[in-house]
Image (cartoon, rainbow, N blue to C red; front, top):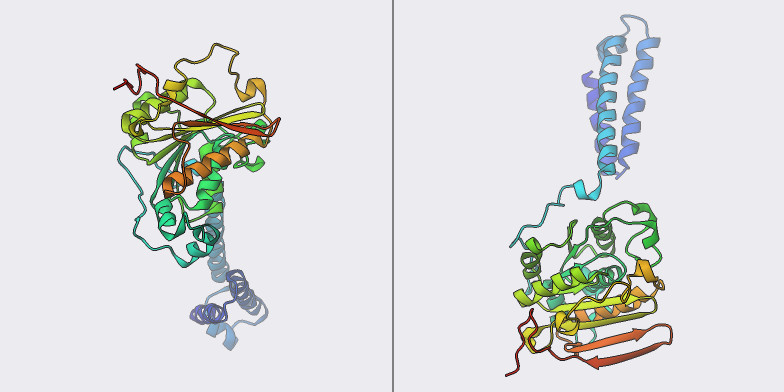
Length: 359
């Protein structure tokens, strides 16, 4: 058997040197093994070659069977690992307050990153300094649905270093006409893990932190405080008010967007800069039926892409220090008539959230 082991090792080494695929190397060794079995069957007892090979036919069959069991076991493990859903894989640990994965703002961009972001780097408003700011930034996206989809894709594509996304929903086929970060292969998967997979495929240089849970009062402030900017694309006022309270309490700016039917809007809220908070502008949730969700009123498929892309642009401008942001302003887009307009927003006297009072 030593002769066989020596021959197998020689064949494997030769294949490695010649860069032969691993499967081809295994096939070559298997052919050598079959040749030995044939020799043991054909050659008479006491033949010199039988003596050199050593062992009986039964012993060689046992050895081959053991190797086969090991290979089948290994193949079975690989198949099972492929079936593990992303939320159960290593690296999908739950978030903990204060646990950060900060990028080094002074770390140079790699050659691949320079090539990837070249069209963005040559913009004088961004440049190398702005791109490094993006790489060092931490952004939280609340909702991985219609608005969250383009926001997540373009923030990842632009090189925002750490992107958190929180949502407790799963991918449904009714989402796919507008929530383009997901696809039919991931139906039933939690949206945050579907988005994480898509963003990793899009840009391996970003860190995606998925939070497969509903945002609650218990975690909102700690989670928001762990980021430099929050983008809210949810479709209900309870969550919008909760995000706003957490942002005001922690001093983190809030870029909020909303859509319905053919219209969308966005604004940057930051009371620490003298601008209103979300509840200054929307002090109370509208009565039932006055502000229906997309599920109730419908929405044209590309509208989330338009407004979500606008949100991503404003986020990149804010993080990189380029241009002017919609701070204290609301941008309104009407897709049905192809019109956009901008209105100024003012803090509301006696707001219970930001506590605005006139000096």
